Amino acid sequence: MRWMIIPALIIASLFSGNSVADINTHSQAINESGRLRMLTQRMAKAYFLVAMDVQPNKSKAQLTESITTFDENLAQLKSFSANQGIESQLNANISDIDKQWDLYKKQINGVISTNNAASVLLASDQTLAACEALVNKLEQITQRESTKLVNIAGRQRMLSQRIAKIYTAISIGGHQPNYDESLAQAITEFDTGLKQLLANPSNSHFLLHKLKKVASQWEFSKQGFKALSQGNTAPLVISMTTESILNQMNDITALYEDMSHKLKAS
Image (cartoon, rainbow, N blue to C red):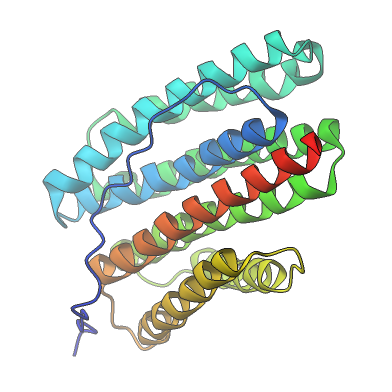
């Protein structure tokens, strides 16, 4: 029997709209470059859901919105690097993103089909690697302990979507060693990142409350992963639970960004 229990408490939609504001600080640049990282996985997940005819209208809208947001964020990061005089330090990273994104965008703007799952997965991973390098480079340039928390929290956003992406790919193509290994690794990395954030001594009560809420949602999501190992799939359920986690982690990342900015100003 398919694992199809959807608690009434799960009301998160398939949307997570984020208006793109001008990037003015290094902490914000790490947050927004981290958003690029997340979007690489979100787009592939949405593509797969459309291909599977799982809430196709909402999933297609999410895909379209994510493509637009990626383009806008990347343009803002290019402007930031020029305005901050660090363009030369980021040129190689941004050029790599441009190259990988051009190839990836052609894939996901083409005919949507489950037959393209492997090529979309590869393109999403290659673009992710380019975006990850940019985030890490920005953190290296900034050289502040507080920005590491922005990076970790932002990476949790990406992992929520990566987990949903790989889970959905397994729902399409069945268990394959590389899929199963990638999913297990992403789950382990999310566990590790969440523990790091929960253990941070500078967390406010509000931040800790939000992190504990994520921990609760995460425990529920892991029940779905157990069902997957038994051959039962529910991509809509996993998409909804990881979407809720994404929304919470987006707020948490913004809170760490604000904390980092205030520490620099003090």
